[in-house]
Structure formats: C-alpha cells, structure tokens
Amino acid sequence: MYGEKILVVDDNIENCNMMADLLDQWGYRVKEAHQGKEVLPLLKQFRPDLLLLDVMLPGMNGFEICKRIKQSPETENIAVIMLTVLDEAEDRARGLSVGADLFISRPVNYKELRRQIEFVLAKKRKVMEMESAGSVRDFFLNLIQRLSPELFRQTLPVLHYSGNIAKLLDMSKDMIAMIELGAVLHGFSYLFGADISRLQTVREVLQPLRVAESLTAYLDVPGRNVCETCFSGAYGCWNAAMGSVEGAPVVRLSSRFCELAEELGDKQAAYRQLSGELSPNVQDCPIYTALAQVLDDEAFVQKLKAGDL
Image 1 (cartoon, rainbow, N blue to C red):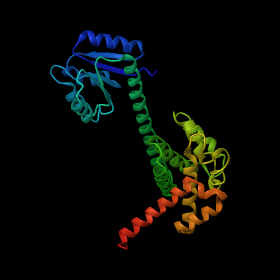
Image 2: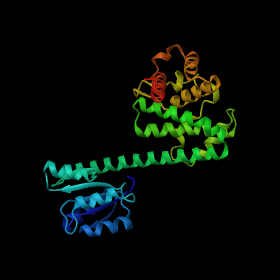
Image 3: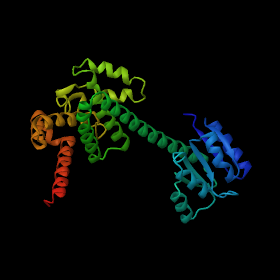
Image 4: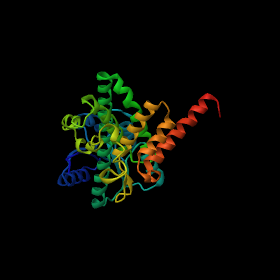
C-alpha cells in the first residue's frame, strides 16, 4: 500500500462516510466532499491521487467536474472513477469522453471496487515513473550538451536509433522510456573516460535514482565491445522465458552501429560491417532486423524529400 490520497465526492452523506471509512481501512488517506462546488478548491488543498466521484451532484454534476479536472494541466493527472446508478451506454460514453478513468455502477461491489482502485492507481504510478524517466533523460542529455558538445553530438543518433528500434519492436511505453534513458546514460558514462573503471563512477552518480538498479545493464559493456555479448550469454537480446526483447542490447547495438557509421561515413556499409561483428545467428535477432527497417524507412523519407519517388 502506498498511502495514496482519495477524495470521495457524494451528496449522500451516509454513503460518503461509509465509503471513506472503508478506504481508510484499506490504507488510503481520505477526504470527503458532498457538493460539486466543494471539489475544485479541495483539489488544490488536498491534492488527491484519485477521485471517487458521484455523477448526480447538486451545483455541478460529476461529468462537468471530471471535464474541468482533465482540462487543467494542474489536475489532469488525477485519476477519476465515476460512481452512478445510471446504466445507459450513453452515460458511460459521456463519462469516458470527459476523461474518466473508469465508470462503475451502483450498488457497488466493494471487492471489485478495491481491485479497480488498485489497478487505476498502479497505472497512474507507471505513468508517473515514465514521466520521471523522461525528465531524467532530458536532464542528463542537457548536462552532456553543456559539458561536451562533441559527446552530445555522438549521443543523439544513439538515442534516435535506440528509440526507433524499441518502437518498431512494439515495446511498452515504459520500456521505451527506459531504453531512451539508457541510451543517454550510455553516452553520459564517457564523460568519465573510455575505460571500464568509469562505470563505477557512473553507478555512484545514479545511486540516488529509483531506477538506478534497472539502468546498470546499460553500462556494463564498454565501448567497442558492445556487440560481443549482445546476442549470447547473460545479455542475450531475446529473453526466451519472457518472450520479449531485452532493453540494454538495443542501446549497445545502436551505439556500435553509430560508431561504425561515423567511421565509415556510410550507414549501409556500417550495417554490413556490424553483421560481420555479430554471431552467426544475427539474422534471427529482432533488434538487428528492426535496425534494418529503421534504415529502410530513413532511405525512403530521403528519396521522398529529394523527389526521387
């Protein structure tokens, strides 16, 4: 239990008190409101993580309250579960159209309600962690730009290819955010030198971050050897048990490809040389295949711009 804050909004005081008591027993911090006009001021004072919002309220109904919450940048991240005796598809559609995260009919099944509250709040936490990863990525990217414009120039294409490969592989949004952060930190690590001893320094810098442990894999293989362990052993790109592509090898392959492209001055030549550096089973690697697709897409766009199509 994370002790998140929930604002219960219901004009039936008895129902509101009962719901508040139940939420308190479940470990949430709770406040109550009984009229629509009370809600917006309470959002600023209480700053809830979630609203349990009755639709039929005096003064301002639940649909209007939800609409205002979701339209304001200050409150748009507050989760909203709407509670109502209405059971028409049109009313549910209206609730979703104003941004409600969930629509639950009365009488409430409290076991199900608890499960849904936990689901909505867990989803919100994931979104907040994604936003946090994006903010950390931008912080380190700006730091690289200030401290070493040349390293910044080298890091940008690694970020570009890592992100596009992850998207082509249909990875989750939070995995894409983590891979992009890993790509930037892979570049950031070279501010401390090119030998493997730099990695301990970077780990110490990252230690205060919640995601520090998850990022270690993006730093473990230095420089030009990034591809030697991408497709074998502990860092194999295909996780058979999970049925998914791991994140760190995406960054490593992207980094090595960008190094070769800069050395050779030709992306297709870099791709061919990369193939020679990898294991014989490279053709079965989804990361390598996705890189080929990214390069094909880039070539198509360039031809389109040049008017060659």
